[in-house]
Length: 304
Image (cartoon, rainbow, N blue to C red; front, top):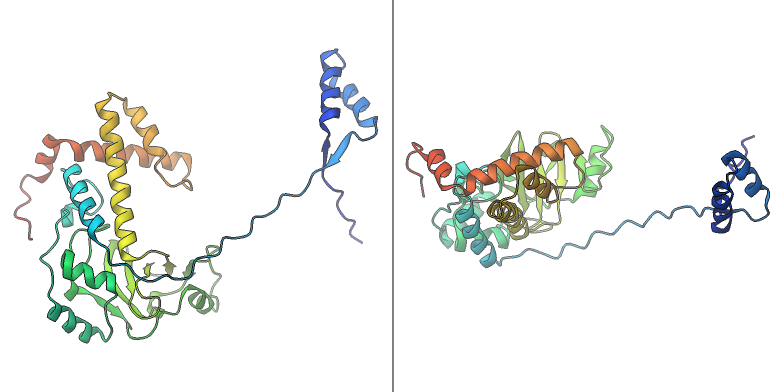
């Protein structure tokens, strides 16, 4: 028969003070501990730590179409990164293609068999027909690829249930180990390299951003506008930090130490140090007019 484990205990504050007094008087630790332990009420139980209840995900609140702040921030980042050092910037160069027309978008929606989400439709109509964006930038409207866009996106819980038939699912409730061939209700709008893509839901939770690679799907609570703005905010914050510290004469180590605080907390110390140094070097190059000129020399004409 299994015996129940004894509850965890610790010295009370009074017993701890008594122990410290005995040690200060020269009583050996083992003897002092024996004296304290023999006194009634020397211990108190340790209450088990309460596991915080998981924060419920908010219900999908819908798409956004307010691109004004994002356009302003894009101009700020374009002026900061004169060497195109952010990932993918040498491809899109922070440029946007001329906007699409309502007729062009209607033809694309007819071909896809589904309406574009309002935020993406507004981007093409009012901001640009693809171009500058996270990683290698947003596809032009004519380059959008549908993943059965007319069939509603089922949500990550349903996708995890499909995946569990063949393999264990990741602990993150927003991820599913599943081939992206099972995705529906989505148009692919961005390629990040290494088989990683991003898309937006056009049927179902309209406007929700979803990422995937060859064998994993990740659902976010982002709209396209929110995701786009966070990319800009993160990059601008890194450039401005390096710019300020550089102008103050900070050392390279100080720059790296400051950059670490902007990186995700889940990284290992070694990985964080390495990544911070890479980012500092890149931001310094991007801020340097001389190095920017060298980086762009001989690149040829950029298509607009």
